[in-house]
Length: 211
Image (tube, rainbow, N blue to C red):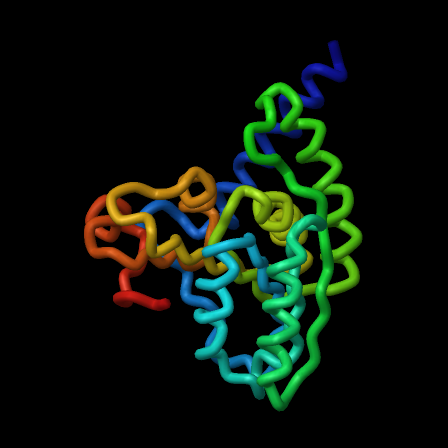
């Protein structure tokens, strides 16, 4: 019985702490603008997600975002090649490429997703520990969830705030993606590319078409 009470109390404490450190429902949290260096984790989600992300990061100041760490799924060789080609055009900074198992394969039965998600999380722990990022940039799909979940642990413990910026795909005009709905209340900045979504989701930001 004591164990049950302890687990309930722990769950309540974690939930209260999560509410305290999460950005909030109606507002985005300003991401630090005073950095002179930013250790940046960039998630490449394959296909159109990768294309959009590589277009997005072209606007980043290479003097500040000079340590770029790409994370992609272990079967996504095309995104790896695109990241290498992109980095060949950069004249400053360094980059690494890390791979994680997919949290969920296409048409994978939902009953097995918990298992594959746990495997992905375990691999992601090792990667995040070695990268120690200041910022995570992601635009889906669901494979980025283990990285974002783990990024909240140092924040919950008061060790470090790893900022998360989520950019919804340009293909999403009237509704958020599944990943977007999950991260909407937890990303420090949540950007959409259509005004229709800005009206539906008040804490999102609309800056026009970004890609």
